[in-house]
Length: 286
Ligand code: PMP
Image (cartoon, rainbow, N blue to C red; front, side, top):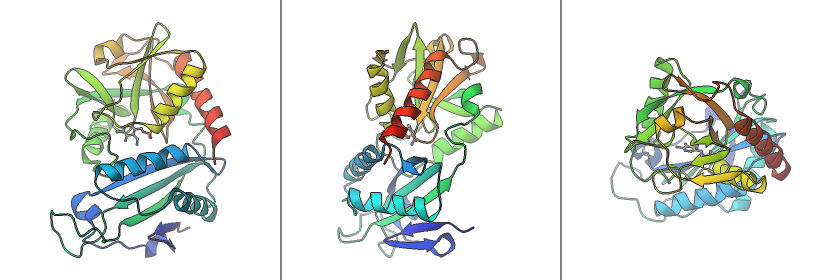
């Protein structure tokens, strides 16, 4: 069945939603996005995603074309129209269609292009992978240095995922100056002696919404947290490793560059944090 998608204020069958070939998102990668998870037909961490969207837009000197209430209304409508129980809503805002290709930004009154669509993922919360854990390889971080802006420029992460696939593992962790920055589409953590270690926020990584919620829940559960960078060797010698993202929640990592982490199975801290994250986020879902 064709999905109903959102394009610039209209709800259309996916086959009828068309964007110009001159759209800045298409020719320049000039756009930002958010992915919000849906569990039980409700949106997780929605307000935080909207705050980050506005921040990303501001960093690119764009004004947010819609209000939070309008985004919420559109998200809910798409969830309902497409009968999404578990899955995601993808939202993208680009600098719009200037009618030609030019490096200079178009005039300020050029309307942004706003696209939203759903992805149905039955079984998202009960993902069997979380019980097995995933394997990662390390790859040099060759992305630009404004990784805090959630732009649609995902070519390097996409190449890294393909490299991971070719090498028979699930994902890649980026390394810069000998230290892990983040995963291809997630924030990374290790656990040592009961302490959760994760890189501090800066322009080097995306300020994960799941990361923020997880650290809050971990603090509430009296778990110790250290925000600092770590190396691949330190991850390999850790008791546990895991990553977070809006669509995977908390995912145990059991092997890094061919070396087992801890027992090579999902550890108790990651497993507990996944449960806490899912419980608390479901309670706060809108
Ligand atoms: N880092 C990168 C590079 C990402 O693409 C993502 C997922 N969008 C994350 C971290 C995790 O962020 P969030 O928890 O907001 O999904």
